[in-house]
Length: 219
Image 1 (tube, rainbow, N blue to C red):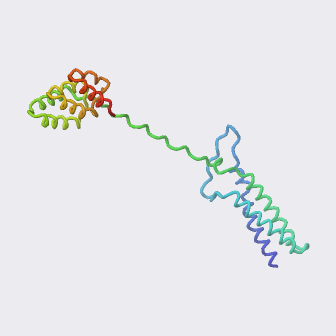
Image 2: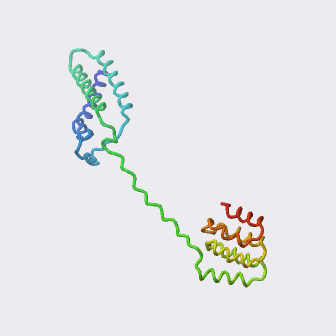
C-alpha cells in the first residue's frame, strides 16, 4: 500500500505538469524564419526558467524510483496501470525538456541603450587683442622683473597665447635669463609652439638660443 501511495502521488504531480505541456511547447518553440517572435505570456501563466541539466538529473532519479516501485507492485490490480501511466508521463516530460529552446530564443536579451555621443572638445582660442593690450600695459607699468613676472603668471592662468604674443612680452625684460623665464612660464599656454623659431632673434648668444629650443621642446 505504501508503494502504491507513492506511485499515485508521482502520477498526480506528473499529470499536472503534462496538462500544460501542449500549450507550453507551442509557446517555447522558436518561430519559423520570417515570422515575428511570439509575445511573452500573460503573468497568469507563472512561468519560470529552470536549469535543464538539473531538471534532467531529477527526472532520472524519479525514473529510477518508478523502476524500483515496479518490482514491488503486484502485476494485478489498478496499481500497475497507474504506474505505467506515471512512466509514460515522465517519458513525455523528458522529451519536452530535451526539445525546449533556450531562454534566449524565446525572450531575447534586449539590446543595450545607445550611448550618447561624447561632448565636443572645448574650443581654445588665443587671448583677444584688447585683453592682450591691457596685459602688455600692465606689465610695462611694473619697474622690476619680479613684478612683471607676477603679472604674467596671473594672466597665464586664464588665457592662451601665440608665439607672436610671447615675442612682444619678452621685450619688456632686458636680460636673457628673464626672457627665458617668460617663455618657460607661458609654454604650457602657447597654442603654436611650432613657430617658436620666431623668438630666436630676441637672444644674442647661442647658449640662450639652445636653452630656448629646449624649453619649447618640453611637453
